[in-house]
Length: 467
Image (cartoon, rainbow, N blue to C red; front, top):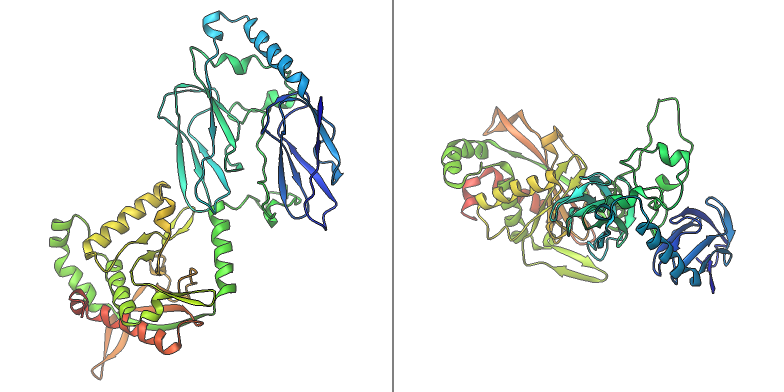
């Protein structure tokens, strides 16, 4: 019995699709649920899976444009048992000694779920090579989503077969590798059932096995500009590469913020003299007692908490036609990494000491550098702080992170002449910027909020006493 594989409907305005990438070869045995092919339309990409087990016959070549409803392959269900039997017989007649050709259990390694809103992941880094022996618990691969990175470990000892090359983007649940347990399962890849082409033979062993290439597109995801075909420049004057998932998420998030909120920014400046003097006076004993340095960020986190208590409108958000008032103080602190900006959340900052806040910041910075931040680390903030001053920024207008209604921008400390009691003095000054959602927060409230932060920073002793 032959089952037809047809191009499915993809919307009223779509009449054809392109066969972008076959995941199997003509004549391969397939199992029910296996991904067979990636189809592309002018709007979306779609993966077709096998409806039954059998032997596939491909009727449409890669790159060919076919009409909706066209038959692009058939699956011969009656050929499945014979194919499996032939493969088993072939393995038994291998010239290798019985001890070396013994087949063990094959364990599939798939991309795990990483949250409801995450549909794909990037194979960032293979820590092992194709054909390597691995031990149970060894780290095999680092996966990156648009929010966090994670490491997959071997569930058992055996030989690793890599199916998806480093740098490829795959959907959640995709099989990216296999581990074959047993005495010497490495013999299986050597006894290839089909002859290799010259191109396949020339490929380096680090690449994914050519029999199972990964689809470069993901299911039902709107195609972005970098995914559309484009002419490459061979002159060496330019280099083209895909945006990382994190960078794409940041770009989308920032554009959405601009389009969904009425963002306005107000500015002020703070005299950092007293904070700097206090840090200098207590730093040695602070480190001796708590094991961390007293930084500027803990002062600003505490100042934000105090300002949120005094101006609760900023500690709220808009949800449809409702205003959601928050009665907790989870503050997001922006941290720059090589891969992009992340904003981990410091929980219950009103209940934490300066030392606990500093320790949390150091812990998050370490996890961010190592790519070990979890999804929960990045969710739930009611307000954010961005310190562009670390990179030398003198003044900026930070962008909101919806649904938050405010974000504070810190900047470089500069020695500037200021008027103090009728006299000109040189003081260490920092410009402060508060971007806020004008739909919810009025100008008076925003200015009052920022002045409250200024007062807390210029009088740190009162801040520590929560006055």
